[in-house]
Length: 224
Image (cartoon, rainbow, N blue to C red; front, side, top):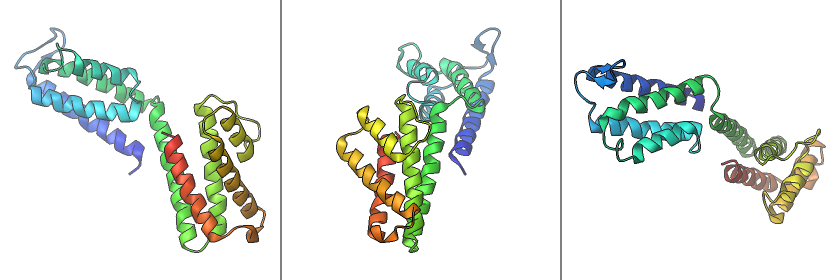
């Protein structure tokens, strides 16, 4: 199951559970009251905690949805009062609608990172199977894509031709990372270039193994 599917399923389950509790309590929307009883604090706390975790992961901690849930959790009026489950559910449903409309930009970044991880895994498997040359080409392509995403993240204009060397220079100039990382990326770009142009005597399997490991670590550190 993909990240998108997992998040969608969690939104569905949590909102349905919240609606069931609200329905049993007899929420009367027109009168803004529960006809039967207020939802229990335990039920409210559990739904609110799961909602905050889900919304933070999918929308981000700076999103309006998460901030509203956090406000409910921190306010002395709503923190321990099950009445406010209806408010929690409303925020959760708003986040769910944004998710279904494709408006959760943090989630799209997460899915992109997941796809990059899949490619890195493929490169690792290629090296393990003795195909270090195509692994070098694949890892180099992944690194180039990571650099492109870093430029977008830091509002650095993308050149018409997005080669590793140009992206690397622009990111280093903007102090996204230091000179040591810039040099390491330059060395990796050289391995990728040699692999792409048939200069197989200029690098070894061990170089590619290190290249793949470093690229995975770099992507994890800088695409947070």
